[in-house]
Image (tube, one colour):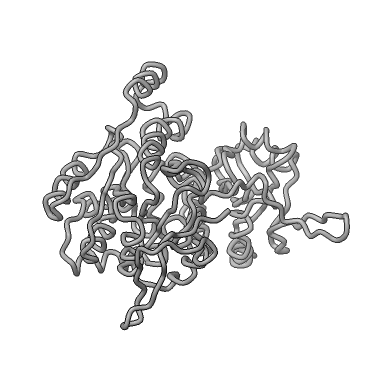
Amino acid sequence: MSIFFAKKLQFTKTGAFSFNSQPMKKDKVSIQKLSEELSVASPLEILNHALSMFGKDIAIAFSGAEDVALIEYAQLTGRPFRVFSLDTGRLNPETYRFFAEVEKHYDIQIEYTFPDASEVEALVRQKGLFSFYEDGHQECCSIRKVRPLKKMLKGLKAWITGQRHDQSPGTRANVPVIQLDPSFEGIEGGIGSLVKWNPLANVSGADIWNFLRTMDVPVNTLHSQGYVSIGCEPCTRPVLPGQHEREGRWWWEDATAKECGLHKGNLTNIDSVSTSNVVGDQAEEVDLFTNKNINAFSQADIEKLNALDKRDKSGIVVLYAPWCPFCQAMGSAYNEVADQLEGSDVFVGKFRADGDNKVYSQSELQLKSFPTILFFPKSTKKAIKYPSERRDVGSLLAFVRALK
């Protein structure tokens, strides 16, 4: 299904795009085509297109982090623009002060949205203020963020986000510059009624910060304290050198869970992904981590390894599923780790933890999502779970060397 713009695309004398108010046929400009045309455009050019197309029916989603770059670009277009933000009631004091500073600097009024008080009250009375540490952040985020966002977007035809490819490689790596929102509805209702603009998609975090410093704009003071990705106070912490920015969000959960639901359309349903090679009517499943230096563990093997109080050697083992795209993505890195550890006092293993092995893996091996990486120390019984979403060779080897 495609949405088409009702304004005619024309070239100006300078070669830039402009729009007039004459209606155009629906087969002229599609979202996909426009996204392709603007895929290498600057954020300023993309913002200008977005604001010129939708006027008062589009708004910038401002989170109180480096999304201020969107506001700066919008200001530079010289066009009127709207800004909204989700006030969950649990933001850092620094973030609230930052909101006020941004409003003053740009002479704008941020449109705040709030969660339904009765829903928040019911959650807190039933589960307490910090239930997300026990059962995951999705329920709280749904009440405090997703539903208020849904209500806000129902009054718009388009919205502008600060998503970037490098923010969360597992979930945002392929975000287009413009898309039909796959999750939320706009004012006209129905799937495909809302256009989502991601002007910063192709911009690196380093370039964003260079831009902010150059333009001397307000920034959240939490950034100077080690915070990179900033959300609610209980669910955000500073990151250490070398850590990915999303590791400061919901740090008690695995990497595949690190979206709050605002951009859930980016997520792949990994349970439905297959890596089968289909020949005729036959499907041959392709296994992962086939390096000769990687030991394949059966469930009996892994149970025995997990039960030992002491082991002859330390080892690293990945709990995986062949159909999981995150497991597939770390294949070459894990194979290289096995090569580099060959002949050392650390073994490298793999255990297929889906299917019949999943229940045991969840109850005894700390499996919450794929892949889960465990280090089995030589001298102690308890396996240590790899806490990072960085699965490159250097990070994995650093984990091993720090514990062996």
